[in-house]
Image 1 (spheres, one colour):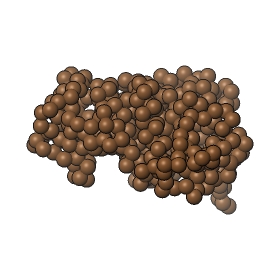
Image 2 (cartoon, one colour):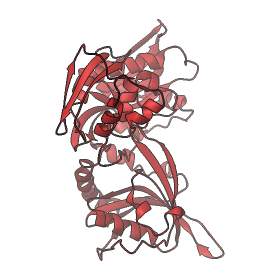
Image 3 (tube, helix red, strand yellow):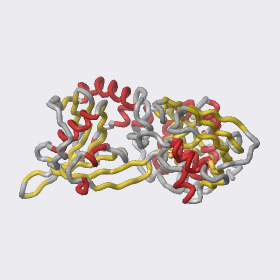
Image 4 (cartoon, one colour):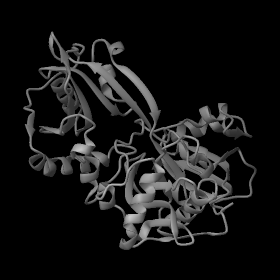
Length: 403
């Protein structure tokens, strides 16, 4: 329960210095004068929590489109800059902020909210489902050959300046993100945040390198390394975006063959094709973690937005304390990929909380797995497996950017 002394409101430009300071302190960072993420902060969707006149909590919502199964562009509220000033935790500031955000997201007509979690134990209690999309860190040596069935085209790959690369990258990204589940739209300012490249952004690595293929691009940094045997620089890939499978093969071959490089690392999708392109996949070291957390804000609107893999007719009983309009029984009927969702008094076939539904929404977590984890209960035999199949997509969800 929130401390009765706390209040919340949207911020104005005069609140920026305090907002910046409180958010930095909440992450044990030092505030700097120019925070690049402030370029994309939407004032009318940014909230601050106050104890009297003292700002103690921050949070914002960014207006984005999220690609959901079926290639549908769904409006979402992307939650960002959530923090509570040290010395003020356990007073309900985060709860007040989360509840305010959820109501404002629904009022804006968005049926879902998404976020990246700084700590894994916080957001499920606010209805966010973990592993709505996962993230795979790949580390591999260079010079690895592809297996014989992977063709490499003679397409020319050129390193260019940032200014030369940006128009092409914007166009390619906008086309590709509409086809990849979990990818987001980018608005003015997003590129400057995502590809921030001042000295303080580099962590001891080089400035970004921009390399263009006719059907894609790759952006990476270089960490200089080597020994008496010569240079063995590490390539840290920030983004690799391709419109065709051929471009994937060409750009990966380009990276693997770069002179003076010894290794490549890349935070990428769990279904990145490189694992099946190289002749010895055991040399590719993988580390998996969660990425997007997804919250269904409006069950009736969210479930029909996406497309489904198989027909199903089930009654879901959803538990949701923060968004009571979601709570209760819903009949989900899917035919030919499209869903109809209606309120019902019929007995539930499956019951789950709204966080479990969020985990499964993009196809990132199977409902059958969540049943084994005691997050989903089946009341009518066969319905969890049928729903698991229906919620799966033809690709693993992936979000390539932190917001």
